[in-house]
Amino acid sequence: MIFAIGGILENTTLGIITIRLFIISAEIGTLILLPKVLMQYGKDSNLSLFYAFNPLVILELSGNLHFEAFVIFFLAWGIYEFEKRRNHKSAIALGLAISFKLVPLILLAGFFRKLHLKQYIKFILLAGLVAIVSFLPFLFSDALKGISTSTSLYFKNFEFNASLYYLIREIGFAVKGYNIIGTAGPLLGILSFSAMVIFNILASSKMKLPERMLWTYLIYFLFATTVHPWYVLPILVLGILSGYKFPVLWTFTVFFTYLGYSLTGFQEYLWIVVIEYISLVIFIVFELIQKSKKSKRLYA
Image (cartoon, rainbow, N blue to C red):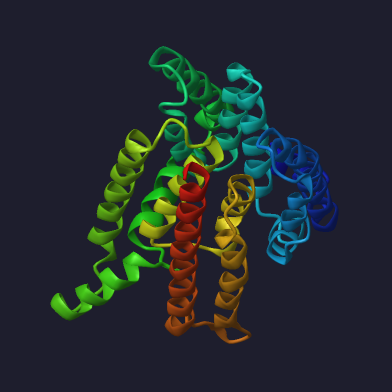
């Protein structure tokens, strides 16, 4: 719909400006909602500045027009409504987030054990219905076929800034003598889905919703074959809401993947990827240890 509105003008510059205005509107909505959600969790509303002035946010959303801006806004809205115990509005917001990017589908698992089973089923059905309705216009075009094809390519062909997959790929080269992404990609997708489901089943019901979403997203990206810099921006918001700082670090280290781009094309530097993920894992472990120590002091 947004691209169609931009295309009506039949002028590239005006079309880009139109799309940018939509994204800026979503960003304004996020900046209004984020402090309110932070206060719901008893956190300083000024922490929203970690999002507002993050260079990756500015570059990739209002700059490069990635639709994660809408995902982030509707996630913030969904979390806000959920904490207000307005489950129907929360489900609608999650459904709208899914309508912009399919990846937020995985976050529906985060509501498990946060709701009674009957409430949970109603929640995912409503969110799913909203997402399905948003896809109805595609039934009268070749878009569904395109979505199916691009999803297949995502798991079987695309590879960029991956973590676990790159390790498996190297093993594949050593054992098979060729790139095994065609089989490794879908298999990692299955393992990722299983890990996310198991995590949300086993996670404590006391764990706050943003934290459940944070770890669910992280599991997905650790198994993914493609992690573009703008993909991690929803994790930034969830980290701010749940009190983790490693997403801020990630939005910095992921910047260095741009070094592979030049006027002559693109070449990925694996040493950058290694530094990125090693530093990320070290900081995650550090934060988890610090959080564990803090919990022990509180209950001592």
